[in-house]
Image 1 (cartoon, helix red, strand yellow):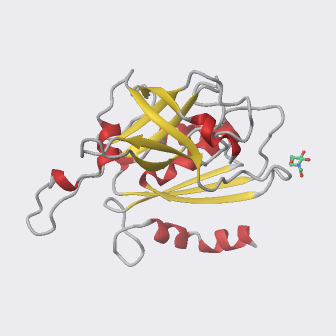
Image 2: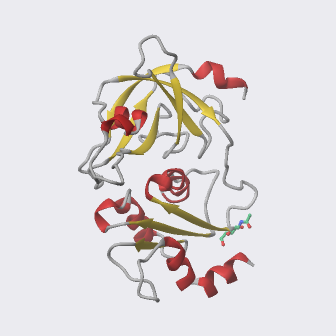
Image 3: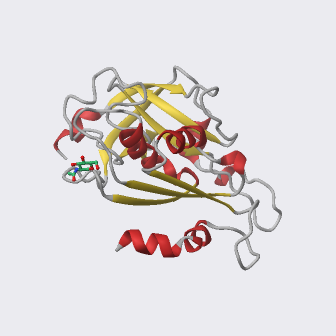
Length: 242
Ligand SMILES: *[C@@H]1O[C@H](CO)[C@@H](O)[C@H](O)[C@H]1NC(C)=O
């Protein structure tokens, strides 16, 4: 993509205001602020493309490694200023399967770096990279089924903001968006308040079903994973897909 090289920026990081949404302990929702507007070109930071974080490796003098994360906001950013972008990152911790003890040498380097970052820190970012997934523009009334586990919900959070929060004159979502999320427990649901608000405000256009593997049982008595939740509604999901 043409603009890739323009987007080599050092940005300030802001941790999301924790009072606005519950964020589990081992996750961070980071908001990066940029010094220039991201919406001057509409291809830049399109929905659900990813930002790459460049981070120094532990070896002195070694080149930076690039790690890709999905953007959890739209091109208007979190504050509708076009100068912010959100990522949602879970701290990757490695436990030795034999001893069950944490082995810090195998912990995720970039996720720990991000989870330990503080408001005001400067972090080098490049992007967007990878494939870009856009909402269909010619028909705002189609059905979307979105399935995610854990921080995989990040790109969908951007879509949902577009559909139900941003209220743009040129896009009025009139279809159905059905979001399935899978996590272990209620307390690690991400952006839950935001999604529940959409459910309340747009009951005809949004469905939100959660699979909580450690709190719910599937119909065979096992753990409730996201695929079991989808199966519960298979008649309806099959219907909306045809
Ligand atoms: C989408 O649905 C709305 C409301 O039902 C309707 O007014 C609009 O014309 C539809 N748009 C398209 C492109 O079909």
